[in-house]
Image (cartoon, rainbow, N blue to C red; front, side):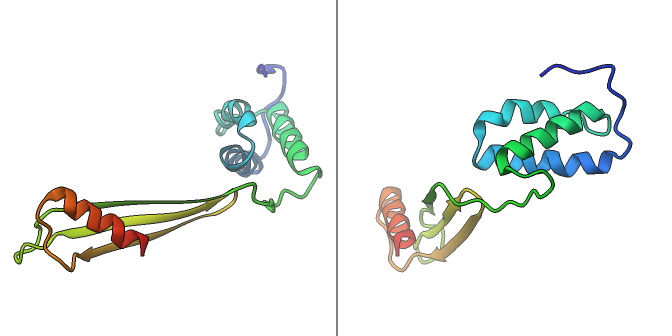
Length: 140
């Protein structure tokens, strides 16, 4: 994917940037094999040539199978749920620790987070026990 120096500059650069952003999103979420080419196209900020626009349109046509409609309507290939938790040992004046954590629900086209932060209901005897209480709390 070399640069075509003979190609003229694109008259309206504002049409090029949304196409690159859409392709970057798709390359991160579903089609990682196009990532190097999309990165190369996205480096043409405010100096894109007509040939660069043609390349971006060809990528979109290959992904979506259409010429003018680039909607991000994809069937999710996967659904991933992850969680993480941590504790701050004996943080409060009464000796109780503090728990915090995050739960993430991720698919090909959306990502949602839920955050939890609270004082632990019991006094932990050591930092490891506080961590276990935190992990148990996130699982509820």
